[in-house]
Image 1 (spheres, rainbow, N blue to C red):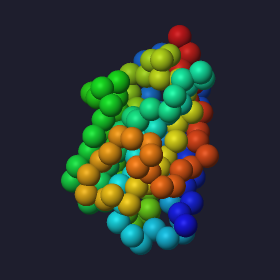
Image 2: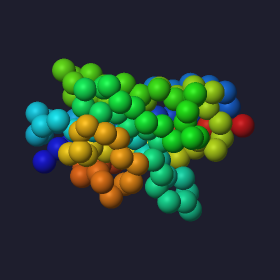
Image 3: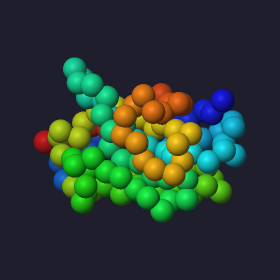
Image 4: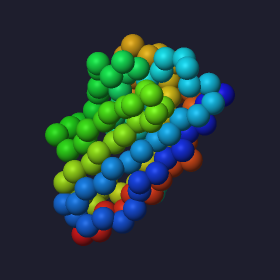
Length: 125
């Protein structure tokens, strides 16, 4: 079992920045890909960004390219999502997830085995 706890969400103005963190605990010794998803009210959960175990491969949704960065610190079992130039349409609950497929980044939620409880990000206009 792996437990994931997200933090860093909050209220920010249009154009602002936030840094989300996701700390993993439990059986964290196995290689994994970590990713961020988000879900806005009334919408389906969508992939935002992911990073492989070694950090050599990242993948971003089109909505996140050029504005978000993802990184990880395996020594701390933590993955980060830095978000810049935030827009009101980025408002959502952001979830961290892990996948046993550690050599590539998959964007389908069904490929991920463990999920955090989510952290709310609200961007005001």
